[in-house]
Length: 257
Ligand SMILES: [Fe+2]
Ligand SMILES: [Fe+2]
Image 1 (cartoon, rainbow, N blue to C red):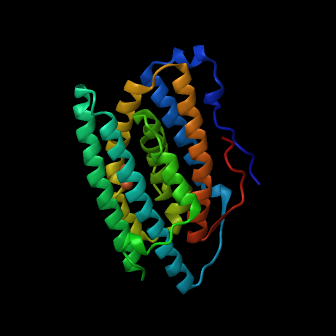
Image 2 (cartoon, protein in one colour):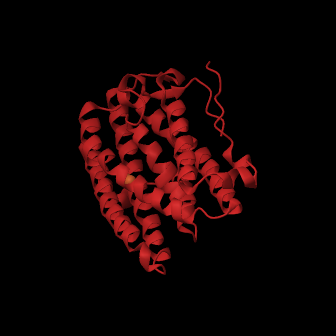
C-alpha cells in the first residue's frame, strides 16, 4: 500500500492569495493540479493487473470504447457549443469561437474513431446502442450545466482533457510508468495517439484563453477551483471503472482532492 498524496487545496486559499495570481498563473495552477492528479492516478505502482479470458477481454474493450465514444460526443460537442453561444455577445471573442468550432469538429471525429474500434472488437459503432452508466451521465452534467464559459472550461478543457490523454497511456508519465499503456492493445494505442491525443493540445489551448479572460474575481476563482474538485471526484469513479474493464484493480491510495 502506497502513501496517499494530497493535491494542493487551492480552493481553500484566501481572496488575497487567489487574486495574487495573474490570470495566466491561475490557469497554470488549474492545469498543474489536473496533471498531478493524473500522474498519481495512472502510475503503475498503484495498480494490480488481473487476467481476463479472451471473450471477456473483447467484451470489455467494446464497453471501454463505447464509453469513450459517448464521452467524446457528449462532453466534447455540447459544452463547446454552449461556450460559443455564451461568447457571442463579445465581438472580440470571434477567434476563440472559431477555435471552439474546430474543437467540435475534432470531437465528432474522435467519437467516430472510438465507434470504429467498438465495431472492431465486435460491438456497435452507434452511440444510441450504448447503455450509459450513471457516473458517465453525471460527468456530462458536471461539464455542461453552466451559464459561464469559464465554468465549462475548468471542467472540460482544463481538467477533463489534460487527464484523458493519460487514460490512453500518454501525458507526462513514461510508457513504462503508465498502467494504461501496458494494458491497451498496441494497434488501438497507435491509432488513438494520432487520431485523438494529437488534437488535445489545441483544445486545452482554447480553454486556457477562455479562463485567462474570464477567471474574474476571488469569489469566481474559488468557485472554479471547487468545480474542479467535484469533477476530479467523479473522474475517479469513471476511470476506476475504465481501468477495471482493462484488467486493473487499484491497490494504492487514491489522490486526496
Ligand atoms: Fe476528444
Ligand atoms: Fe478534446
